[in-house]
Length: 107
Image (cartoon, rainbow, N blue to C red; front, side, top):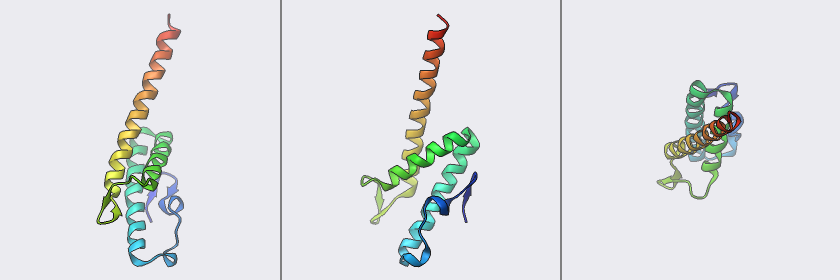
């Protein structure tokens, strides 16, 4: 079982093994491993709020019809890279708006 912060990957990607074929189960295991590793990394660097936002972004990208494919299956690593890129853009935007508010308040 992959754990990240206080969450189990099985809670986020909730499908029982008996409900899937073998290939589907392999994909679910890959999703749980990739999402868990990503969430753990973001949490250790930026905390709980950022890791929650990171998981939301990752899941949205994974569910997207534009998800990158490898051999007809989503490429979870590429989705992780895209999610990290979006998270950085959001965090940079958040920092920029906070700085603007501070600069404006000081004048």
